Image 1 (cartoon, helix red, strand yellow):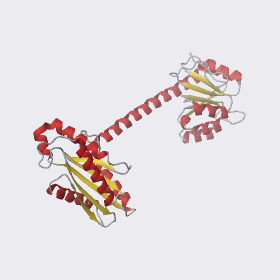
Image 2: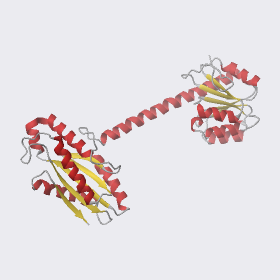
Image 3: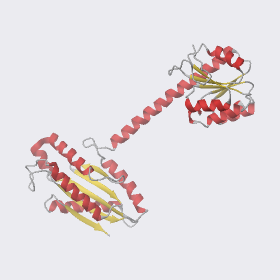
Image 4: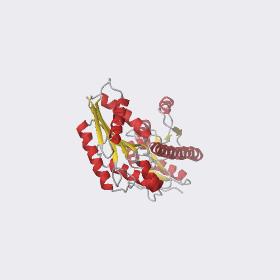
Amino acid sequence: MSDSTGNNGVPVHDDLERPKILIVHDNSAELFAIETMLSKLEVTLFEAGSGAEALSLCERHDFACIMIKLELKEMDGYQTALQLYERDRAKSVPCIFLGTAVEETFEQLVMADMTVDHCELPVIPAVLLAKTNMALHIHRYRRALDKEILKRRRVEEKLKQTAQVDQTTFIANRRYFKQQYAVEWRRALREYKPFSMIMVDIDFFEAFRDRYGSQASDLCVIRVGKAIRQVISRAADFVARIEGAGFVLVLPSTPSKGAVKLAERILERIHKLSIEHANSPVSQQVTVSMGVATVITSPNIEPNELIAMGDQALFRAKKDGGNQFFVQELK
């Protein structure tokens, strides 16, 4: 049994689970007859006496079907349908025109990707019910399709995020680093600004793993990664884990002086973690070595050159004993 609306366009008994049908008609007797025919369906009926009122209702409700009388006084049914089609909430709603359809105009609506049909007046109950049921079927199919598309998009987004996130530290992984570094480098090329990178490696990590085991090693990496991530705040800057005990900070539009300050803050934060490392020859707790590298981006410099500079600086810091950073700058 259908529910119908009152004079203010609000259904008397609105069931949110029921499909909503909007009837745009300015003849109360014919409107009553149509509503009586549709009373066998499990739907909620809405009334609109004009095209303007129909447009207003479509701003507030999602309809499964819209029935429009072709010969309305203020705005004819075709004009109403075209304006409804411009609304996102009504763009894909099937329309059933009530009256004699003008073939040329009807074809134009079909060509505009509108789902349209029509019933001659006076309406034959069996014909109207059949066409309404078809419109409701299309509505249900589209809703199910939209849900499936949304579900797939969410799965794809989750898979994409998982593919770009290190599953131990839950920060960016090597794959993300390669992709995003290329993006940031191309952006920086347009500006000829300084571009810095900090390579970070936990000192004597294998010795740590040998003494404390894999679980403690994972926890160590997690805490170090979190400490590194906390030193950056700009949207373009990011941290990625690129190997077992290795991280990289990508710092677009950052001069050497700014990168050095971040490296100093990282040393301080790692020291404050106070993670025991009895097998370290330089300290009784976990420390890191860093390679700080900076270039002024230009077409003459390849992105791999900055990475190589960072690796060289990191090697020098570790060679000198660790728990420090070394700086390389190409001006």
